[in-house]
Length: 303
Image (cartoon, rainbow, N blue to C red; front, side):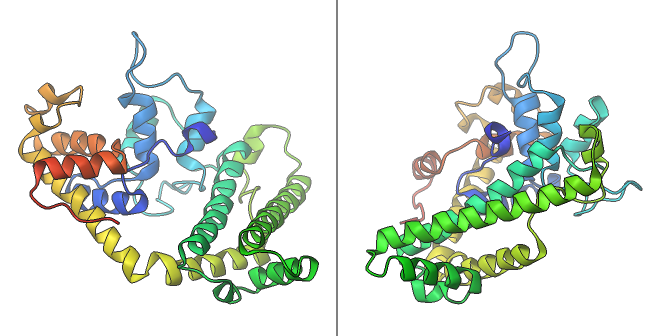
């Protein structure tokens, strides 16, 4: 599961996703999980007899549903319209998008959340966007720091940071394990199907830890994600993605390394836009910046 959890990456992370969604909105938008599904079922070209990768049903359904059901039993979207690539694939192989994912996928999703929070705090401290005083805004983190200071009163900053992070991961993992064990004991599943048919996520935070998670995210948004320096970089990254999209739409031949480039020019506009989105979504940050500098006179400075 972890192998394919981030297949639908874009250049510049969430900023690239937002920019792609905006330019592709007239053609159905861009969705991270739907793009992951397209990559592993259609866009990868490795086998002689079929496109995509030879993945199990459980891996595919976990890939699109690891954050919960995509629609209700009545067919209504739980988080807005279900992306069309997911609906199209379900016509071929039903991924049961009204049910929860299997337990492995749920664990992958919550582990991803824990990792993001912890490493973003670590990065924030190292970059200077966060300070230990700022972490005091979150009672959970304040408690961890007091615990470390009491035990190691003269610890240097790098070791102090590491001790906070390892304790944060441990407490969050232990919390998820405790919730999962309690819910499994109540559910008493006899098969993986019983997990999918449950009316709630099994592997998740307790209410108390979920509140801590919200407080940490609020801290990260206010101190890092919305910092003027980061917003400037994000605006530049979005401009690069947008510029490249319009350039490739106007002249698909510029996508020299795309294996469908000779086919794209003859497609209608929505189909061409989807192929351009596929090409852009597969770029690394460095490649996107270099390509933009080759096609345009001025490229935003992302330093």
